[in-house]
Amino acid sequence: MHIHAYEKLWLAASVLLILLLLGSVTYGAVGPGVAMVSDSEQPVDATALDEDERFSEPRVEQVGENEYAAYVVAFQFGFQPDPIVVPEDSTVTFYVTSRDVIHGFEVVGTNANTMVVPGEVSEITVETDEPTEYGLICNEYCGAGHHVMEGKVNVVS
Ligand code: CUA
Image (cartoon, rainbow, N blue to C red; front, side, top):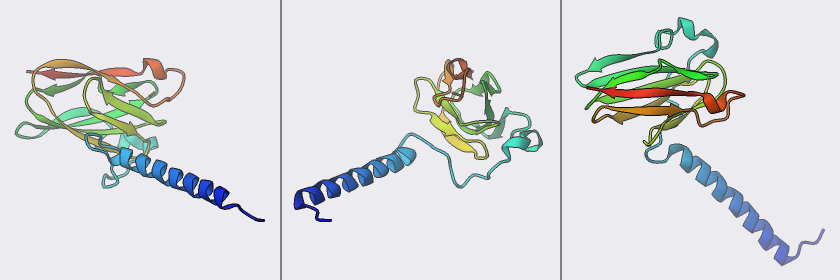
């Protein structure tokens, strides 16, 4: 088959486009302000969260002076605990996993936003300031109740 130079150019251009697209997806997954699924986290058995030390009782735990860990489970269609109550002026790391399908974890009006994948633990660290009630939404389509899947993050004094 004979390929015109012109067609080769288009071929090269489309390959370049695909590479750029892949590059942007990869960049988006690790971009600033967005903590996506972290490979360094211990994987977790999504079908046995009840036996997992971190997720059998989703909760907020104090782990240092002004430092907290929030263990959160996303499910069809909600989050546990709900509300997630964290102190003002503190550093909070959210460890989020799913017990069923892929969900999102987005604290409305902030850059705390991650995908939540069954079998993996997503990690996001935020600094809280003054008492506020934030909405928590799922931003990945996860089934019939996706649009009502929500929770609260309450920053309290
Ligand atoms: Cu969970 Cu959409």
